[in-house]
Amino acid sequence: MSRPPTAEVYRIDWLPGSDELHGTCHCGAERTGQDPVEMWEWMLGHPSGHPAPRPAEHR
Image (cartoon, rainbow, N blue to C red; front, side):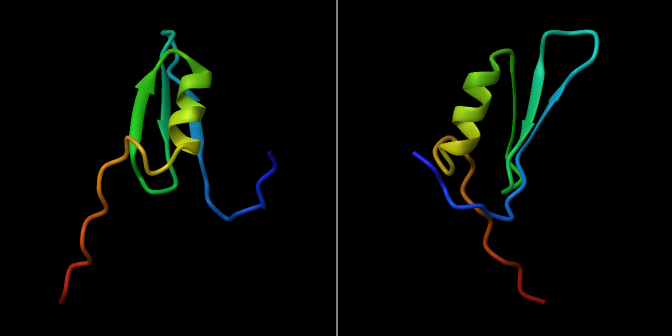
C-alpha cells in the first residue's frame, strides 16, 4: 500500500557502541529498541503507542 508524501519527519539513529536504535517520531515521541522493523512499525502506526498530545498552553 502506497502512502502520499508528507512533510512529517521520522528518524531512527543507531546508538554507537551498542545494538540499540533510538527512534523519534514527527510528534516528538521517542523510543529505543533493537529491532529496526519494530521501530518503523511503531512510528508508522502513529498514534498507537504514542503519548497523548499535550493541550496548547495559553499565554
